[in-house]
Image 1 (cartoon, helix red, strand yellow):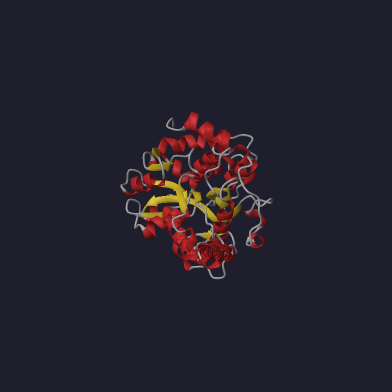
Image 2 (cartoon, rainbow, N blue to C red; image 1 turned 90 degrees about the vertical axis):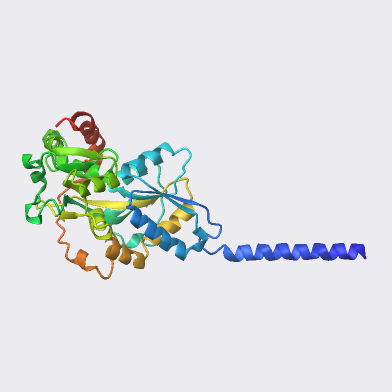
Length: 349
């Protein structure tokens, strides 16, 4: 009798174990079933990252509480990912310039793959080996405090920023740590030296801009606060963040599309090699969901790198005028140019 009970219990345990194994294998086809933590290094505005993560978790509840976003400058993402190459801590690099992502790819930091949306994307907006993909296009424009400066008195082009009338009126996001500012400053140099061989005219221009700059903000939030308090009333920044701050945070910000054109950055996303690759791919695929892209364009002023069927009114009426920028020349020279600016020009104008 005792032996029969023992056999019955053993059989019950075996059945339960097999049942458990069966349910696990049934779930294995669901993305992220054994969801591991996804660490996202992002240069995106926090409002955007919070919204996207909430939508992602709603679609993939197995990732609830398992997506950590660290917001930082685009250049800081590159430097952090480089420093962690031997022991990667991040999974997704979300928000970075074309030249920054290309540098990361060249350093062997990014995973090569072909997501489902890749075929829809213009070849100019993605790495040919599939190591990074452009998510949005970011025009860089002139930003101003529209309570302090009437629209008809705001600068109309880049060269207006070096007019002595704006001395101590300009505040700039600290350049070295910001992919946006590095691109703007490099564009100012390259427009005066098409092949990049003689950066001196650009350096001279930036020295005059430095003379008009009252402060260099430590991060975007610092820039917004100081601009709203009129510690500086002019800046150069990306269009999306200006519109976000004006519309969603009611900041007193306006923008000018420069008469000579705006540098338009390809701002992208990549899976970090050695991170949570499965989670990174699921997250990046979700970023290119057609419904999400439409919502981000409508509510977060994004210009998607993959076209959407219906443009929101603000985008249809944008009248974007791209500057003629050679990003290959900038990619070769940006580090040298920005290091020179940091050492020889900043706070010396």
